[in-house]
Image (cartoon, rainbow, N blue to C red):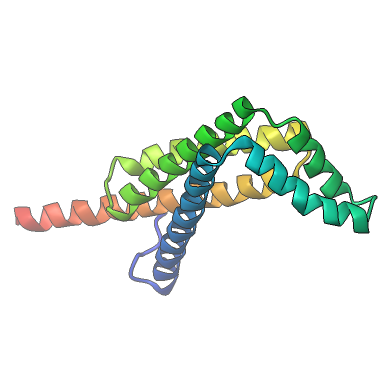
Length: 171
């Protein structure tokens, strides 16, 4: 059952949908910029920068797990891996930006497409959670699942409003 879009709850759900789109757009832009940064920054510069960041931390706390882990990652950071992450972040961000743009424009076919795309993200993220046990992937899966529900609701409201508009024109 669809909650009346004019009700207080309907307006709040619509606001939540639009706020989540803004957040998705900001994160997608960040991903794209991060990918572009990885693509344009020389590999050695990244390795030297991370080394500089972690050296101080390791000198102060030699048992700092995060600093050791990051330092270890950059020791094996070939250009191919850098380019993979660059293109992955660029593509992932661009796809999400396109999705957000089409939803803001209220393009009807974009709603089921966005739900399918987000569903794919949920499946991937949840499988990563099951494989690696990262709580971050579980949280991302939950947030994308909530987004799917909001997109579905907005799609229903949009179809209802467009259907009512067509009926009014016919009379």
